[in-house]
Image (tube, rainbow, N blue to C red):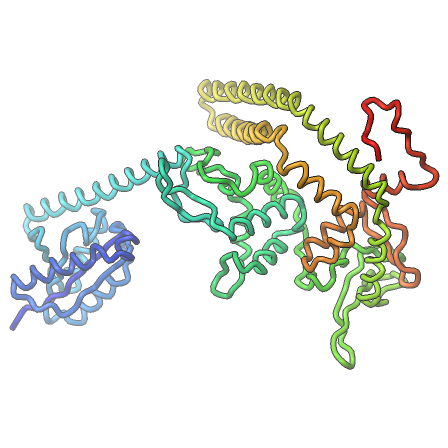
Length: 515
């Protein structure tokens, strides 16, 4: 009767699995050996993408179960090389014994397995060599990845918002993957400045964006949001403390500044905010900003079911309030709010005056940039001196507690230095041109109602934050109370009142432009 055999193949690299290398060549060599020996190959078992040091392999278990069921046939197990069975001496001995106990006989075209002492010595030596090769390969991969990361290059999976691209003199480099990169930048900057009050709001912003990748259910998981907010890579730096890599400047283009990243961490580590309710959306832009005139608490909102459908209302739910549960139609309150914004349009003369003030402030800020730059340079030198002192203290002490404390202080100083380096790079260099900034500012000041008319909720919230210094109280009977307007509108309004007199232009130093 022809001897029956099974073949076992294994590759550890995911790349070998996706590109189809390794398994096919192993099987071909094993079949050639079986044909030479006159064996009938009845099955093939393959483990893909599994390390040779692992014992828990699905198809290895399946093969052992298969051999046990056909113990009477005394199957031969053919492997291409001893390293395909295991790359760890303990794992090799364990699997070798398991195959034997199941009733199988291990054979390979690369080595003759025997039960005598000399054969076992050779077998164990080869298994030890395979284990050494695995460990050596791991060391080489680690050293190369660490060295490349120290050079400012990311070596891990592509993060959202980037893609790897071959760039001259860099090799594989992270480059912005638009439009996803811009979406992430808006999310991070929005959380840093408080535009998004919680991680929940960031999640909903990303959920609403068609350009940000979602999971199988079509949503963004909260853990992914936290990963985005805590990843310093988006600020242009690489950080892996367990490899001894701390805030290495990357060659990739950052999506946000390091200062913005620090603001995000401060918010994450500060007092936790209550998650935003799911029903706060574009339907009720004034919710949480307009306060009840009776109790002073923020008003909430709801959809109420009527005879012919759903109707939107604002209302106060504060217990004990005289207006608790008294609803106000959404269209009524928001129409009155638009009228309030319409009254905040300054006159043409006031806009011209604000243009002159804006120009003078812009020029003065540019003049002060030189002095600010020198001050920042002095602070950087101070930080470098302190850092050297802590390094000296580390070399002089054997206390692990002190070493850990000094390392934390050094990291804090490094973060401070990075922030100052960014400031000195930006000092005197506006983020936008004068014309662009001037046009944006005057457009908003001249007509805040125009931005409020936008369909985007974030635009409406910007109006609330920039136009008013505190929430507006609303009375069910008389409408909005006197609003505390933001400083720019207060100043322009003050200049235009009959009680205020504008100072004459002649005699001032320097002379302002004529109106």
